[in-house]
Image 1 (cartoon, rainbow, N blue to C red):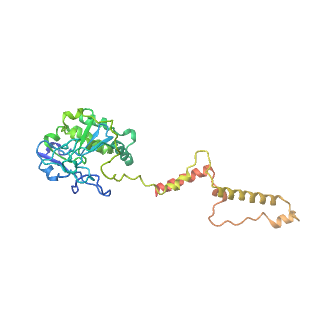
Image 2 (tube, rainbow, N blue to C red):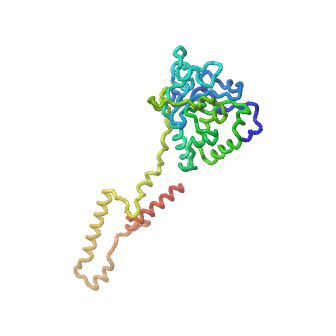
Length: 334
């Protein structure tokens, strides 16, 4: 945005870490940095023409299916390589070539890969937006590109490409500003959508692509089928304080459930108090004004300093609600 009016003749978009091939690697503890096999950073820096964007994958128009390029996916042995000079699309399309190593540069089979679901889940975790405030991919694409998404959408994962000044300016500055404002407002899902749309934002797609289709009759395997499954983002760890709050959530107008041992202990206490009351009600021998004056009121067991009365140690529904509020306040402060 800041340099839109002062762009260089050519701008290269790359990640700020060591460039490596692939993305999901066989070693589940590592990830590649979005280069195709036999393609280097130098290819991006020395590229000519309006747009240099070697495509790494394709998706259906709602981003729930994906097909990756054989020279991008790791786990194939032997590894196919991109032919030189580097082409934007796989050399052999869907067919492949058995005569070449690893079957050649081609598209792999379609796989289930629900990107919008992942994007929205990660956005919700940030806490800045509600589910109904997030954008759908179709609405984003129509607003940015000006037409509906193609049936088969091609992308460069990681959004790494090289583009001329004229290509970058083929999309108005106001469109870039609109995207930036969304991101700054917490719309993380937009960053995923934009990554999948750069080829169309920069008007680099062939017009014939809009008429392509996905074969829906094939059985689509789960993502990914060409290598060991990547580590899925683990569920958010449970809050260690959650077990402390769970027992303190009675429904309105009900008392807290008591465990059997506590119920039995309470019943024994009631029986002791009932027997004690009966003993106090029975007349004693020699009872009279003098005995009453001499003995005074019935003696009670002394309570330890700071101990709470029994009534306070047996909360009713109102007491449970007060305890819940106090516990939540303490935990929030902590």
